Image (cartoon, rainbow, N blue to C red):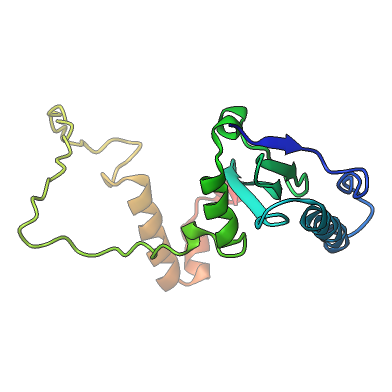
Amino acid sequence: MSARIYASPKEVGDPPAFDSTVSWQEFAAREKEWEEALQKWCAENGKGDLRGKEFTYGVGDGYARYFVFSERPLALVWCGTGDAWQMPEVVRKGLDLAYVKQIADRGFENPIRLKTAPLEFVEPPADWPVTETVQKKKKKKPVAEEEEVPTDENPLNMDSGEIAELARQIDKFTPPEEVAEAIDPDEKDVF
């Protein structure tokens, strides 16, 4: 038999609607107060040992949350706070009392998934087969080396970086007056 899911009772009312005019701490306090009222109502009006206990089911990035109202027939009251997740219908139809007891007894504050040991990364054993990743190198097409011949544009047979570096070195050691004398008068306007 599947579990029956109910909305919150009239005595407790609906969960607080989101209110962007208050701080998130104040809004969280309102939700917590409502959750406590719903849990208390389930504990006082429900049937069975689990009445009022919280049942959670992992959905998306959080949990679908319910409070147990009765065990026989299995009835849960949806806690529509936070992200208000709900469990899928196919899961609800397959719930049985044994599974709900297992989850409800562990408590929401201490879920089973947090009891597992953290992953530990270790070096593989020495005899562990190692696979090498071989990167294919692109073969470069052979380029015929061209011998640079001094031209009028580059009489020193240097690239622009080498010429700039040579100019910096000359500027370090040549007094500005001598540099000024060496400059062609027609080119002085360029500077």
